[in-house]
Amino acid sequence: MDIRYKPKYARSADLVRRLARAEGLREEIAAKASGMAWLPRARRDTLARHAHYSSRIEGNPLTLPEVEAMAEGRAIRTDDHDRTEILNYFAALRWIWEKGVKKGISESGLLKVHGILTKGLLSAKESGQYKTVQNAVFNGRAIIYRPPPPEAAQILTQSLVEWINSPEGNAEHPVVTAGVAHHRLVSIHPVMDGNGRLGRLLEAWVLYSRGFDTLHIFALPEFYESDRQLYYSEIEMVRKGGDDLTGWLDYVAGGVVETLEKTRQRIVTGGYEKTGTGLRLSGNQNAVLNMLSKCGVMTGPEICRELGVSRAMLSKLMKPLIGGKLVEREGTTRGAVYRLPGKF
Image (cartoon, rainbow, N blue to C red; front, side):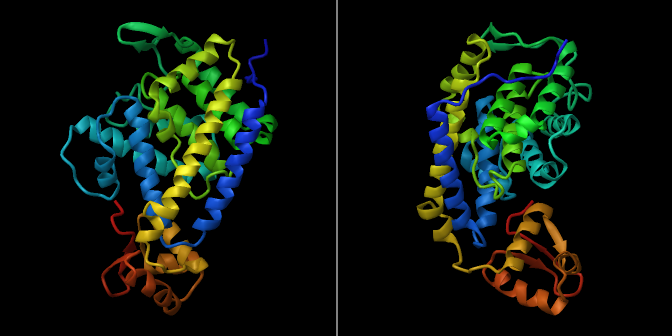
């Protein structure tokens, strides 16, 4: 029996048009963002938006300003469970940014992300593990979707990962591969809880690893949450239509276009450029911000080693970054450490 996953879809005229528009917007945003001083701030905004909107779909009550405050490292008064959900989401997305993209998409990586996402929220037998009992999707008390049984969860997930990494999956446009991965994972429902968030993180992981969102400055869950009922309906229509993903992929591609247009608008008029220092970064200065965004805190010798520069050159690189309040320095000797403002 052939157990390989073979997604079914057609390239509609709408899909082709939306993919072309998405590529144009992506290139325009990349050109605007390259080397700009506000890029780390934009990434922090994306971290907050991704966590807020994806968790809100599942019922987390925290507001976007509250989640933004958490992304800046500020304390807020809220329920421990709700706070943990958001902090875990930050950690899961950071893991994908920092390690997942380098390692590539794998079954073990997917379970690792789920373990980070549900740490302290599920038991050790459920966090980062396949489900062992049947689960279901409810609308109130009514079951609206019963996914495959526990014994099928691993083989179906492995088959999906194999398709993502196959010549066919690699040859497809990243938005198409990401959309297929998103829908297929939430349909498999391989873990006891967190399937929706895991599916949306897998979608982002595909976009990052396939080079569509190398800057990490847009959050697709914002589109899904803006009309939650439509999101659920689009997922269900695939199941009712014999697992034909054509309409779903049209919907996802439209969401990518809308999200990129909003991101471009934020860059131009929504705060990034307006609140920036006006400093134009060199390649090494941009590399410093990228490293600090990923690592959190670094010493001077660590930065010198990564860039291959002297301590004297490091001082010249860091002075305008510190003066422009893009980087914070603690200490004044060889033991000084550097971090982004608000980095936690």
